[in-house]
Image (cartoon, rainbow, N blue to C red; front, top):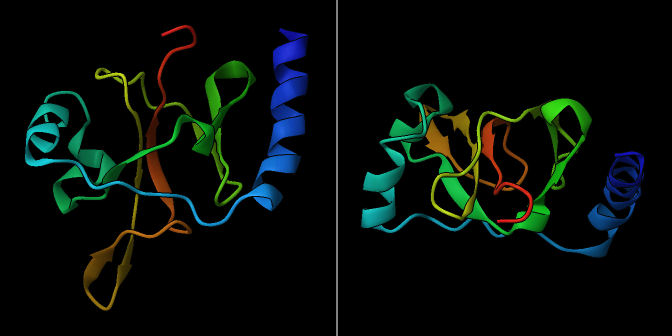
Length: 116
């Protein structure tokens, strides 16, 4: 466990400097229907704020917390992904419209369990 925590801390300092903007991939209509079964509405799913991200976009920390690489935000893991994709629900209300962007406030995260 210490090795995992040490690696996560190391990765959190290195990864933000290593890459550009995070890819936030809009779900297909079928994926949107599927995630409606297991991602809560409170995650802003109904405003189309949940997007697929590369698993390296989230760093799993000790105690069930997750660091969002693009923002540095640390929040509790909302749940495990049910479809084998890593999901980040993040958007900001700008001029009365929900806008998804890499720096947006993350509401929920659904990483893929280790070893999946």
